[in-house]
Image 1 (cartoon, rainbow, N blue to C red):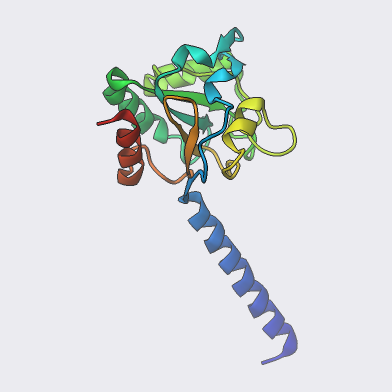
Image 2 (cartoon, rainbow, N blue to C red; image 1 turned 30 degrees about the horizontal axis):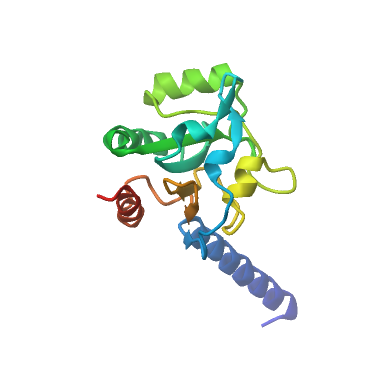
Amino acid sequence: MKPALYIVVVVIVVVLAAGLMYLRSLGKVQTATTNDSADSFYDLKTRTLEGEVFELSAYRGKVALVVNLASKCGLTPQYEGLEDLYRELEPHGFVIFGFPSNDFLNQEPGTPAEIRQFCSATYDVTFPLFEKMTVKGDGKSEIYRRLTAELDEPDWNFTKYLVDRDGQVMNRFGPRVKPGDENMRVKIDELLGR
């Protein structure tokens, strides 16, 4: 084999292997190693999608699934599964917090009004939606600094974090983990005491 062709083959193999590792990470599930932090997710404040200050303590005592959302992503149809999960489990003390984010290839470019319209008209979303925010990197919001204190940052839209009734961040589910995933459902049901 000619040296130039050999180099091209090696580069292709390395790129394919890196891509496969990245795709596998999208479905990864992580569990926090400790949950004895004095800081509670429910001690934080944010803003509603419409810009009003909102204290997450209003949901203290509920199990929460926190998701970074985008309306122009291949995973956007997960809105439907998230809404189904919310409607089923909300009476049992469960809530989903949706945080739109434009961090991944500008897949959430909309204004708050456009995001609300899209979510309502396309998926009939009733779970709480909050302000668009940065979820990764040096400029990430306080919400995502707390979520990622022990767990990885989102690596794509629709990364999910599970928070217990006391506000301790328990698990991270990769973007490709669908809302109906059996492993995620088991962990939610455990926290709900079902």
